[in-house]
Length: 141
Image 1 (tube, rainbow, N blue to C red):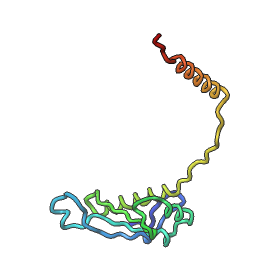
Image 2 (image 1 turned 90 degrees about the vertical axis):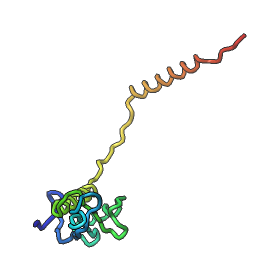
Image 3 (image 1 turned 180 degrees about the vertical axis):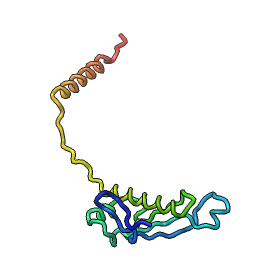
Image 4 (image 1 turned 60 degrees about the vertical axis):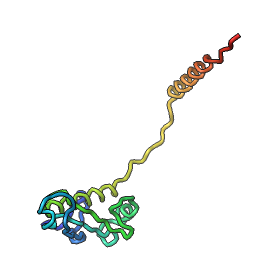
């Protein structure tokens, strides 16, 4: 059993901040699905976590259906046949969500069109205009 969920080289989350609940998986699976609680509900309270405030804010602002209004991330994992595997899958999904929230988009420096590209654009517009003008109306005299 590990003590921390490693998110990046510098950032990790204590597993104690995560809450796991075993539930019965849905869907087909034969007799096993009715007897064994292999699916996992992972709950993670963003506000009460040890994450940096900037990451908490970004997570709360994310438009993700897995994040409740109260700031609790709820992840359901039921793809694997074992509880341990589903637990790992749920933690991987949480890691991906936090990494996504930490991503800072690169600053875009606006550029100006080159003189050549401006000329080409105007010339093509002129050609197009001349082509349309040449179509003209035909008079039937």
